[in-house]
Figure 1 (cartoon, rainbow, N blue to C red):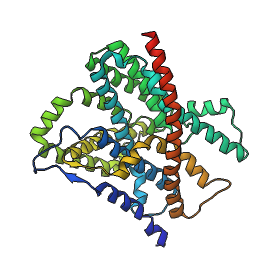
Figure 2: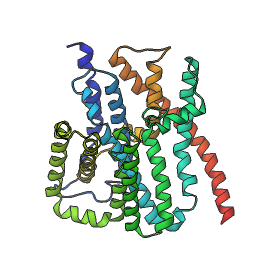
Figure 3: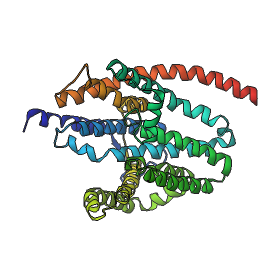
Figure 4: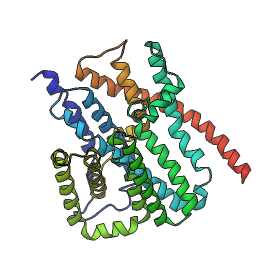
Length: 366
């Protein structure tokens, strides 16, 4: 076995150390944290963690090294599931606390924070291809979205979030403060969304975790009742959830062999993703994770997600090509983080100016 094939497993080991650093159990033994388990600081740490997992997932698909590292090819959808859950949870939590005022200017406030960095990365990709001798027209770029393979690699998640924001806005307008009909409407959207993706022959990653925003909405709406129930039976529920997830996750490939219909076998990832997110939530009630590194990465998690494809293409492109897999992975992670810091600073500056103008406009209207 080559030395690089062994050394590259330092990356997942480093990830484990990052998780365990400053992790603390809630004391006493039977106590649970029912207030901070989905707080801003806690979820920021998890966003940082899962942003790294997504990057590891894509890197492991671009390389062949590592006994442990290569297993990350199997776990990308689990990390994305948690991001989806947080989106639904955060939106519903904010709507419940802020009421009708949350609807005013919702899309104008929400969409630019995702669309602006996305447009910048599209432009960066266009320039990269242009410099290397390939020219894409607006029509060419548009057709990549219709075909289910966006111009920016791995950006399907961003498109799903944009669609979900629009759907959520419509649900707020239609259902008002009737939360259960909102959840039913979001579930109906998911069914329709799946049907369209399957009809258009999109990859299964487009829909096998897209129900999690709906689960997040449900959790935010009935959080108190759910937490009260969990408190009564935590030490029974948690092992059941974890064992069920492990059994489904391990047996997934075997299930695919038995179920020959691609769309059906792909959707089987959904219960695995739901159980994973529930497992993370339950463990968050008993173990608090968080440190400055995870918090820092959580701040730039969106920028890391959007920019990763660009960095991969630059480091293995026409002008630079890092053949050594360990060096390629390490350089990718470092450059993605460094680029994301600058990228976030630039986007925040523009968005801050935009929001000042938007607030003035909304105040004028009111």
